[in-house]
Image (tube, rainbow, N blue to C red; front, top):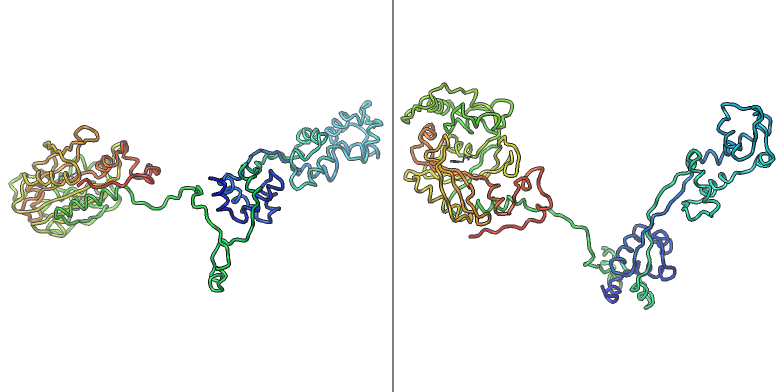
Length: 504
Ligand code: PHE
């Protein structure tokens, strides 16, 4: 910033700081506060701003501070141990070597105050003259105590020499380090002061009183430096998945679908039995499914009886069924739904929807999977179905082409697949320009007569499902799904990701 620009935005308080530094360069915040009669905190703030404006530079140094410890206080009150000793020896109260005075005797001998003669303590001339006198140590302790803050440099050379003894002798002092910030004028700062700074009172806050009384007309308001750097503030933001969900919702709605919703906590009945998944299917195992304690409620008896029959012997579908007894206990188990197809079958069994119908669901599902780059135990599925008397497998392929094209996936490949509830079933692969290879984008099929019979649905139903996060990873060019969702989310990325736009 140029000096002219800086001068324009200078506040009264800041000018006063510059003037104070002009009188005496190199001041600490506390000194400036005293000089300008401001609070240290606001001075600190203003000095930082002056630094931003290039008018002040700040030098940091670490200073040593001494404080008298509790032990030191005791010495100030009672004197050093050896002083106490020679006092008692002088008065004849201590005469011989004793355990109690052992340490003091050591110190007194080192000071040449006493000699020992066959265990008898005798004062030397030096010792005699030391009685009742303050030692150097006591003097320095008192000097330190007398100062509010005692910096190392406040002490004279001779006083400093005593410090090691004070530290050694039972920690009579405490040593602390303090970071001192000293403000100096920069060349620009000096020029500013030279030019003469006119100080005037400015006001930070427009109050009702200022408005009512009309004083605002005469008042000079503080200007703000809107270019001053500030810490980043992260406001709320849509989760990246919301944009993808919105995009897919739009595609479904454009294609005439309406939305369905279902619970996260399901019975095994709706998640599996209702669509003719056998009761011994491996996907039902705890390794794949999160079960919850307690039992859920089965739907009305007629529907349960129809599901039981089609599972056991195929009912009147022409199928033989699974030829094993169907157990309601297994169907009553509570779990976190493993696919949104459970929600589709609730539409058939509870909402009793009739053809023609086109519905979709984008919602959360749960699978007991080990977390890795491409798997999370909790994710989202996109599901759609079309029910119509005349719809067939060829329509399904056309629907998929249209649906994926609207999401930007133009080239599709279909591969035969297996689902217990659809026949034919196909796995869908889409060409990824980004990865330059085919990637799995969904699973689909035409619901089997066995899965539709319990609901009295004679129309054909085609359906598909896909993983939302797989699409999101493509759109956001992520290589690790964990960055997207859950406690492993990449916050930095969540704060900065670019909002995607639909291609078509
Ligand atoms: N439920 C299947 C899955 O979870 C997706 C699907 C839905 C397949 C509808 C066929 C029909 O992968």
